[in-house]
Every structure is written in C-alpha cells, then in structure tokens.
Image (cartoon, one colour):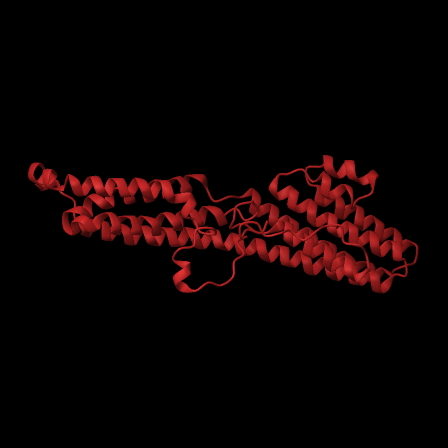
Length: 305
C-alpha cells in the first residue's frame, strides 16, 4: 500500500514513486516514437495514400467506448480490493471480541495469553496462505510445537488453527470456566473469523477472467499506437504531446486495474497485510497484557507491505 503525505497539486505532477509511470514508461516511449514517425511521414503518406488517411472522429468514438470499458473494469477491481479490506476489518473486530470475552469471563490467565497468541497466528497464517508464502517464521513463535507442523502441512492452515482454538475453548467450558451460552457467544466470533477467511480465499481464488484482461490490454495498446496516425494529419507536431498524454491516461487506468484486482499481493497498490497482521496482534495482546512478538513494518520507498 502506498503511504505518502498529501502533496501540493504542483508537486503531484512530478511524483515518480507511488505512481504507475515506472510500469508504463516503455510503452509510452513506443507511442512517442510512433507519433514522431507519423508526423515525419505525414506529407509522403498524404501524397501517396491520401484517400486512406485516418482522421480524429473514429478515434473519438473508440476512445469513449474504451473509457467506459476501462471504467467498468476498474470498478470491478476496486470492488474486489474494498471487499478484501472489509474482510480484514471484520477479522480484526472478531478477534478483539473473542479475546475480550475470554479475558472477562475466565480467570485463567494462561488461557487468555494462548487465545491472543492463537488469534495472532491465525492472522499471519491467513496472510501467508493468501500470498502463497512460507509462514514458518511467523507461526513458530506463536503456536505450540505439537500444532505447528500439522498447521504448516495443511492446505488451509487457518481452518486448523480455528479448530484448535475451538477445542481449547470447549475444554475450558467443560472445566466450568464458561457456561454453555458464553461458549455459544464465543463460537459466533469463531464463525465470523471463518467467514472472513473464506471470503478472502474466494477473492484470491476467483480472479477476473483472463480473456477479459487480454482483451483490454490489446485494445488499449492498439488504440494508443493508432491514435498518433490519426492525429498527425490534423495537429501536426502537437501529435507526440497529445498522443502520449492520452496513452498515459488509458495505460495508467489499465495498470491500476491490474494491480488492485489481486489485493493480497505485494505490489505497491495491494493491501498492507503485514501491517494489518501486526495491528491485530497488538490489539489482542494489549487486552491480556501479552508481549507483542512482531515489529511494525516500516515504510520503504513510500510502500507499506
């Protein structure tokens, strides 16, 4: 996630880090080269093939349609991004609620700390599961050794962690630390954690159809390469400037849509899952006076992971 202070509008014109320019710079240079070549060959083309010269009106109609398609694609991508953020917010609320219930209803201090540790492990396990990374380093210090290997070997480690937590709470209820109604209330929070992790898995495992992405990429690129040919016959040497600026707008929208459609990755515009996991751990550990094992992630080049 990009984290930058609010800048003056003039300084925003020259921002490099945190923008999508590094991802589209080579394509913009290609459009610029085509625009310069179109202007240089304009006189020859008009004299030899004047009847087949392109003009602005067709590109105006194509540009409107393309802008609508890109807007729809970006809306779908942002909806996935925002839903993912809401699910992690729901996860934080459920973890706090469950920790508060255990801490207020049970006198077993050791149980309080184990629940907080397990909920922190759940958050980190979900992060690694969504990103497809190895979670051993984060889970080894938060889970008992007898649970660790089983969780690491599982395809869905978050489900096993919640199962172990449910079994521990059930054992505490049988030891008369909780009543049946109190255990049911805790179980509702466990269900909320399950729903949040399942929703995140759905988002991660159901990408926008690949053919749709290919279509948008091809259409935007072909349009940006043909646009200078149409502009050169009417605005001359302004073509490189105008064509490159229009290409920047369309290509940037295409890249932004690609980045936010997969919100659990490590690109600059993805969710800062490491920071969220740290926040969840701090939140639950503070409730039971437990030590926080993680360090707050640092912002590197205006990017928070």
